[in-house]
Each structure stands twice: as structure tokens, then as C-alpha cells.
Length: 223
Image (cartoon, rainbow, N blue to C red; front, top):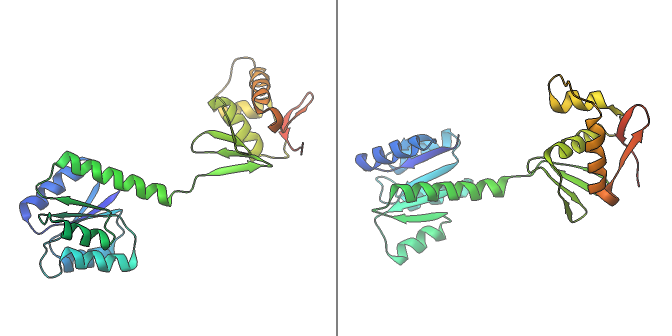
């Protein structure tokens, strides 16, 4: 669950933002002025800061500047100051978005989602495993041979992943059924042979699967 710091000195707007954003599934922490905002920011980790500009003690520009000295956490500025000069100042301080009051709560929520999505993509590292020039994207269930994408069914992908993960080890049909089906399999275990046959056909030149006659399969050859 993403945690959002809402910095707003107007109690009615603060309550509205709190209830709407919390209802959308986010964790919310409130601050009513710039000093309180910086204190809470230093004590906790946040995924996004929703920052009013006209704040007591330290204004939103000052809060944004201090945060940017330490972090690239996404910041959305909320303000009644709608002049181009004010917007440019906020963006120059590396705010990620700038929303003028009055604003639509559904639109604000979608902007929050968009900024969080961009941020997560920047910090996201796909989980992959490789064998020779074959690469598996474990999160996206995608397979690449050099620069070429290979379309596999989910079951074919799982079998290939299992073989590469246990590179050099012979996996019997029963091993594969137990590891991938996760329950007692009452059908013909030769279904594995059918999946392997289709998998090898799709892999083509990237077929590194070796058949161990009478035992099972492994990936251990360097075509």
C-alpha cells in the first residue's frame, strides 16, 4: 500500500483529501504546516507528497526544496495560485505535477495514480533469468532469444523456467508435474512430453533442452 503525506492547512480540505485518498486504498499521513511536514517526512518513508503551497511557517516551495535536497519522492503541488509564474516555480523545484484549486477529486486521484506509476517504473528492475542468449522475464512471462520475442503459453514458460532454474539437473516428468501443477496429477504424465515438444518447436535455434532417454529432461548443452 502506497503511503501519501498530505500537507494542507485548511481543515476542511485536509479532511476531504484524507477521506477520499484513504478510501481509494492509500495510507495517509497529515501535516498542517511546513515545519510539521518536514518533521513527519524525516521520520517516515513516503511514496508521494501532496503539497499545498500557501502554508504557515514554511511555504510549499520551501518544503519542496528541502525534500528535493534529500529525495526524488514524487511531489504533487496543490494551490490556488494559478499563474504561469507560480506553476513554473513549482516545476523548477522539480515537482512532478501542479494542480490548481478548485480541483476535481477523481481527477486528482488519477493524477496520483499516474505519478506513482511513473515513479515505480523508474525504480523497477524486471526479474529475469538467462541461459546463453535466452532470457526469461519472470514477471511478464515473456521470453527473448537475443532481441527476438518468443510467444509461449504460461505452462510452456513455467517448464522452461523450471529447467533453466535447475540447469544441469535432470528433471523427471514427475518432478515437473509436482513442481508446476502443485497437486496430485491423475492424468497421463506424458502430457509433459507434449508440452516439451511444443516448447522446443517454438524455441527453434534457442532450443537448449536435452532429452535424457527414459529419465526426463535437462538444460545443459551449449548449442
